[in-house]
Image 1 (cartoon, rainbow, N blue to C red):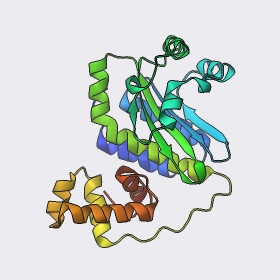
Image 2 (image 1 turned 45 degrees about the vertical axis):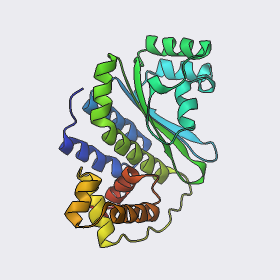
Image 3 (image 1 turned 60 degrees about the vertical axis):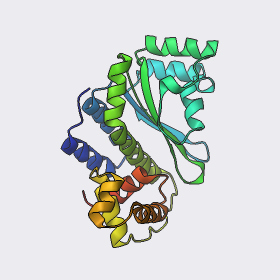
Length: 241
């Protein structure tokens, strides 16, 4: 689980942006999994009307078992992430019930892995999605991986979700308001990995003023947070990194 080669990640994100069907999403999620050297990667989308689909690398046997047993009712990952807006390590979820522990043991037996990290994503009209990576390794190795790749995982999650929304039937996306030059500058530098303090210094403005620009851009883009705003601005060609 080595550091992600930036050029390769950017290449896959660009391909994802132009994906035209669900089969392409499946191929891409396998490539992202291989790029990050994890055992599994899954994206699961649910529309406000309850329609759902997904792509991922779990074995078909486990997926069918999960559906047959209606594990969605007891899965701590689903239950925990539905109440959250921020990424979460599976160890921070509630596995205390007997049913949850039995579910976890069975999932590990099916090769899901003893470690996991999930990114909840919310879209318009009640849409909810979950992007997950899982792996079998010790706690220290996993902690290092999530620390190194947290930003990339959030970025990939939002790219998959944006594409899922593009595929949603009868979707009519609203017109995005143009970003101001300062908003473009701020998001571009943040996308390049600058800290907020570094961005403010580079633009010769205060961090408070920068926050105003970023929040304004986030509102225009309909983004849930700054990373989501960067992902949307990048995918729509509003900023170039």
